[in-house]
Image 1 (cartoon, helix red, strand yellow):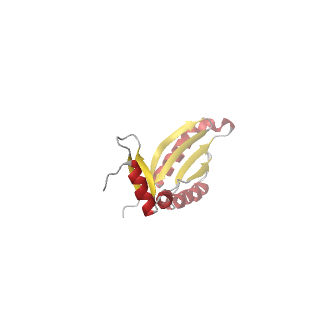
Image 2 (cartoon, helix red, strand yellow; image 1 turned 90 degrees about the vertical axis):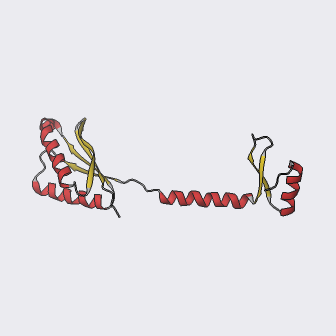
Image 3 (cartoon, helix red, strand yellow; image 1 turned 180 degrees about the vertical axis):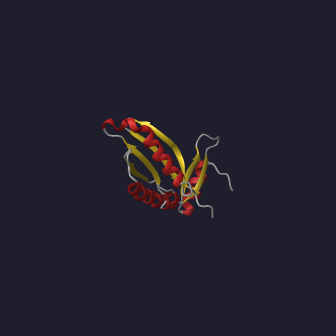
Length: 147
């Protein structure tokens, strides 16, 4: 690593047919580096693209129940919920109360807690059943596989 005055550094960069890039302008004297700037930018873009590919998008699947959902419908929706969790998607299960059915809040909560109990091997409850307006919502996240 050599230290040159700015004029000499520019000459060296021209001689090597490379660019003189200022790394730290606030330093005294300013720090510069001789490099191929286009190649540097290309490498940066490549790194960013690789980082973007590694990130995973969170998919949220919804399952809707009524407060008086019968056994067959419950089993059908539970199987779908299991499939969603196995695929790695988060699950948003909710009971929708229409009209006067809001008086069956306890039935809706029991239904969601039963679903949470049935799915405990595949997922972890992120948010316990909570009433928001006319919906009682529960969030379930898939459990991470230990490999």
